[in-house]
Image (cartoon, rainbow, N blue to C red; front, side):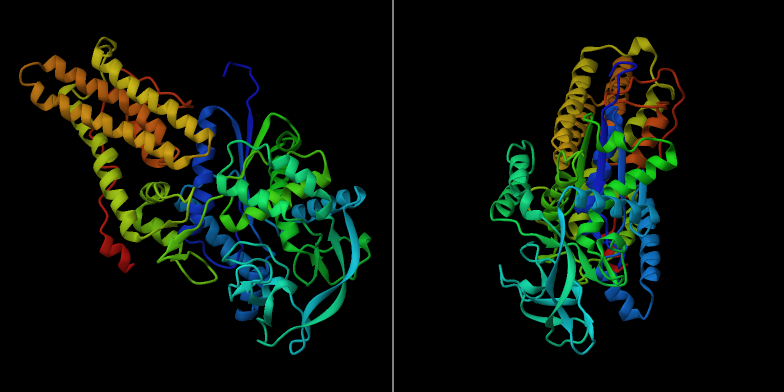
Length: 551
């Protein structure tokens, strides 16, 4: 990228977690870690990156927990939003802004967005039947109703979506519904609501998604099938007293709120506007400029909201960029079951981060990201990946190279005359090729493959060092032995750079120890010559699986 050239902007949108419980490893591997790794690569590539997300403060799971604990919903939101911030800190997740749907800014953006949709003819009102609990004497939001899924016959489907097959639902779709409040069978009563003309956008959505190249197969196939089977208008309001108020000018009664499925996805836009306002920037650069690419990192159960609902809303709004890619991950399975807050499967991710260490957990999860299929995750497997690949592979390479440099290069990086040899060229070609190939993987959002490419280069460098054996070579050719160590030091700069999106803290330690500071690009940094080196502490310690399991 030449000086003065306008950087391509990349908007990284990450799923908004319900602020009703702590996040587990399924959440981290499903959306937050891959988004962070991708954003870090794009920054190194030279793009102007904005990574946004926030707490979903209005989901009905928050109301369910608040009622169970006898607290106000905002107390639950505040508690778990703080937990999210702690997790981002211990996992080194580099959000540019992590906000909340409870802000005044978000409310204003939602109401303005609805006004534009209404002006464009996509909002209307009608009387509709909604479930009512005759014992609790109240209308029931979607997640207050459970029953059998009409599609896959799963017995515990929620009123908004079936966790088993992923289909979006309306509570009235459920077979044998029950109220989660009283356990009684709800009855249907009429209520006036606002609706979104989703059916009018069916053809436009198909025209948008069908030409997409590079999308994950399961995402594109599901989206085409879902839209192709026919879309139906959906209510955008609900009888609640918690959430973004329905705009007064719609003429609905004051106790109605914007339905969270419709409101939460606007958080990507409101978060961008909030960030731009705080930093003196123009939010239109991220949402209108053709130089901006937008990537949405979500889990499999969020595919319909990000490849159908939100794009439909953007089409109806007009003038805003549609998603460039929605690299939705599949499920993380624990004991064959989907990791789930609602089912109580999976310890809090922050506990694992503290037990493993930040970069070690990031690495272990990155090797197992469920990009193509559901992925079984166990503590033993994470420990094995960290111990055998990270500690024994990369960590050991760094430690022994620095030890050799201290002993054979008089404790300094080599001078310029030591940085040219046939071996150097061959080894550097391995590292440089790995950076090129891993970049291609990143561009396709194949994050596991990008990591595997860099790990292979680490293994090749380890093999080069072992085959050359400078500790033995030194006995009869000290200059050649020093050259080998110099070569590996040069390789370490590129390897640390290529691993930095995955291992930001430990990679920075390696680069700092080699005297490489300042802004970096996605290319092997030149080794700074003739600087003092010190033995480097082990980057990683081997993990004890039994101790971690006992935590």
